[in-house]
Figure (cartoon, rainbow, N blue to C red):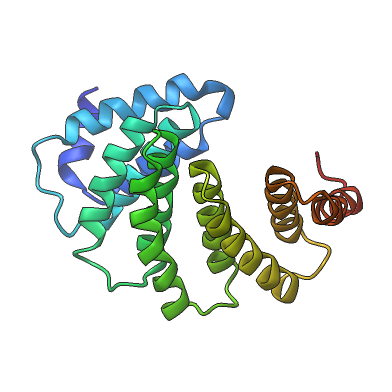
Length: 219
């Protein structure tokens, strides 16, 4: 314990080491990962972390560990903190910022705050378009996620719009035999089932299943 406290005060960059250690703990030992993360997070409270990107990365990984256990409230809290630190260090469009913003969207959605998630994801989509281009896989991922958010809200026309855009981009960029393409096709298929267009639903769902079978993925 004494060594732990000494290390903390001597080197702020040790956040990199502790961040990695949290992620490298096997998933079946998630209690230990959260226990370590909780202790470090508590230890860091009240200290000035402005300009410390390694601490922000620790927060991101710590939040991830909480999110996979369904602790979305805590994951969202630390995600907001990580974004606050990094947004003062990096320029808009930096990959780390984009990833943390995307994680925040999914966590808010999982909390049932889908409309708030959309208010984050819509401008994030424009950032990916501006800084990465429409051919970037992450842009298509954002489109698919937006489609799902609107699908969950029952806004079928808007869901179809985003699902269709993601489908076209994944077909063009990833090709017809890719997991991303299969996801887009499956989403469109489920959308058309909901709206009662079973002919289109069958087309897209069969496309999805064919890719899964080709790639030996789990349905």
